[in-house]
Length: 258
Image 1: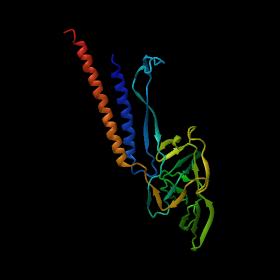
Image 2 (image 1 turned 45 degrees about the vertical axis):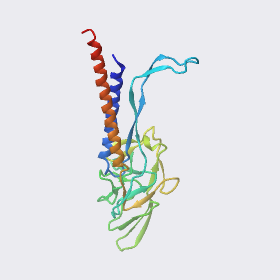
Image 3 (image 1 turned 60 degrees about the vertical axis):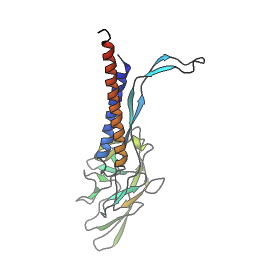
Image 4 (image 1 turned 180 degrees about the horizontal axis):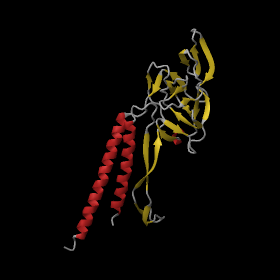
């Protein structure tokens, strides 16, 4: 059987995964803090027909197609969108917020999505009720919450006096942030590939700073994804043409006796 059939089939499978990745990027174009993904590929093993030697400078090797090798997360910042909501936080630079499940704090989550809400107990929480680590509950009657670029927290008490809590929201970095596990719901968890989380003050040791009343948008560029989608579509189409051509060649060979 012709190698072209199998090689082209692997190409179609690879481009289908590529299209799945691009589609997910486009679907999350409005997701706060989303980081786009990129599918990467490797060629498969080669059949050696003739080995290159000192006397024969070029050998003969025929490839067996392609396979997906990884889906890489592109760690770049999205645009900052002003919201004027005092509970919205964005990170300008590197780092992640840490979120704690009040019912199970053994496994922390990390996120770039800073669209927080104030719950009935005075904690800053995300849409799923996970609490922002480093933020103690505000007392009853507290107003005018202020979180500066270094993560320091203050508010006005019931009589209108400014109170500095002494609390500081820390940011967390990883040796390899692209290795974080995606858990859905804008949540990430550390893995062996990402390395251990390293906590520290905002603005220190290369960490970004905190911007209150802002949200970080997705880093997906629609035009780039559309170009990538067209490229993937054409590559898929070319592979189908190669299969059709190989089939026609086999058909002509089968019909030689007639």
